[in-house]
Image 1 (tube, rainbow, N blue to C red):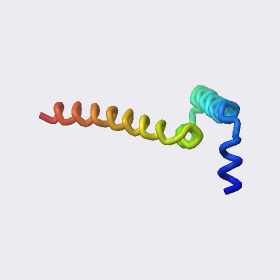
Image 2: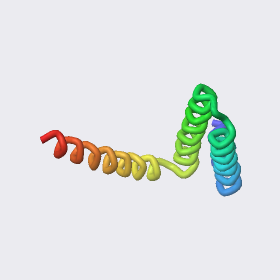
Image 3: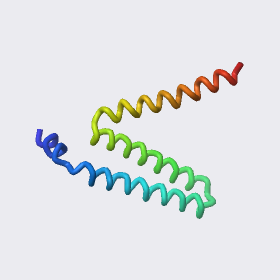
Length: 93
């Protein structure tokens, strides 16, 4: 119960600013790694790490803002994947 009370008292705006600032720095670092690195393994590792950090940031944001964002994100993902499914099945014909 103590954690739940401390979570409710959390400054959401400041927390989200810190999370997404970290994501922005990771993306800038990835851009630098892509421009400066010629090694494929390093590039693949950096891109994978940044993708995971971005996904974690989305889920932390959803946790902080509540369940409504999770439902909205599921709707967006289903629309995008539905679009690609319908495009793929039309091109298979």
